[in-house]
Image 1 (spheres, one colour):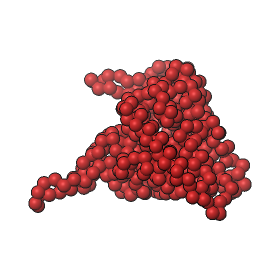
Image 2 (cartoon, one colour):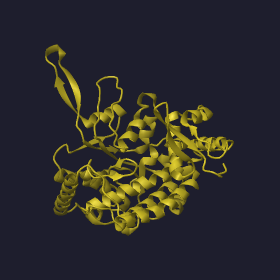
Image 3 (cartoon, one colour):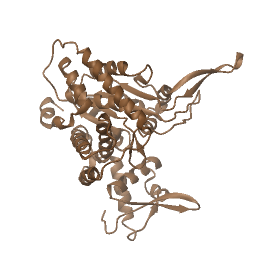
Image 4 (tube, rainbow, N blue to C red):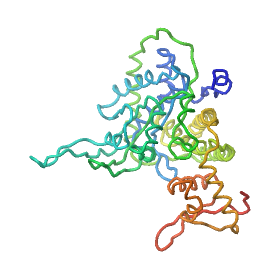
Amino acid sequence: MNLVEYAVNAPAALPPDAYTGWIKDYCDWVRPSTDAGIEGMFATASVNVGLAIGRTINVYIGFPHYANLYVVLLGLPGVPRKTTLLTRAESIRTDAFAKDAVVTVTGIGSGEGLLEAFCEVVIEGEGRRQKEVLRPRPGQIVLLDENELTSVFHKGQQQATATLYDIIIKLYDSKDLTPRTRQRSIRVIRPFFSIISATTPQSLMDAVKPRDLGTGFLPRFATFHCTRRTPMASPPEPNWGVCSQLAAKLRDISAFAAEYGDRSIPTSEAAVRVFGSYYADLCEAAINSDRVSHIIERIHTQIRKWSLIYAVQECATVITTEHMERAIIVGQYLEACAKFAYSALGVNPITQVVQKVIEKMATYPDGTFHNGRTIHRWVSGDITADVLRRELDANVTLGTLLGETAMIRGRPVPRYALPWGQEP
């Protein structure tokens, strides 16, 4: 992509209405001291609010979703200024929280190594039987600072780190983990995990393959295209007095979340209606966006997470219409960024597999349900059972498939069918 194509196709800046509360105050503090893209400031601020909330207040979407975020700052070299933004964010967290309240991991070597950040090393036994053991720290907050997003793709595709994608997906969903390891056993309990990374459009195009869009890994990232600002040859030092004020406000947010506890925040009926209207449009956009359908389909979760962040940064006990409308603005921006970043990757082979399933289903009478094992036999050479299950469930969410759970021999078995009258 040359500079002319980039300038023509780049998405519009994140609208001003997205900036409010602590997030706006943070961006106003950072902006005079760096020429970093303003969208990167917004993303970093949102991650910071999420870290302050931690494993407490959540929004229920099938299961509890917390305020952890995976964000990637996308822009031409030097535009996102990720290191500068992370330094500013860390200076606030250092002032706001106790040491090790948030563990920052710089770069990722393997999935097992990442999980060790959620544990502490203790010595058990005596004498020759003495050994180091990893003891879980329930509720531990971990932030991964990954300098280049595409390095994660390279590691995820290597056999030695093949479990990396799966671990990162499960951590996004805040699931407890007990992976099989070659050395010490690891247990991760009630994790809270966020990622900040960066890349350029060209690096993304070179590293990401169409199949990566269907793994469940990339769709969990919120892509923020960073708009270029006027370069600063000698940026001034930030106002550290304002930094202390922001840290105090962040402590207040954290204290409110801790008092509220690990339970779901309600969404007002009016906010539910607002989201429902937009969700219908989002599902239609996903169906009509073959190359980025998996990423767009996941944006509804991002919107709900940001509605939670907007509410809690105000210490509100309900997600209101205003919170939801601001979150939808973020979602619309993320949709535009996804189309800009990934549409040129080509046809997603996972989408082709699902189309093959739909065409096979169409040969049966209306309303015929098929279990996952049967469907996998139709396409077993093209996709793993786990990935197929995620894709079928995603299509149920989009409305292109029907789904149900049947009890067979005392066990729940997911089954799928075409909606009546649907053509492949």
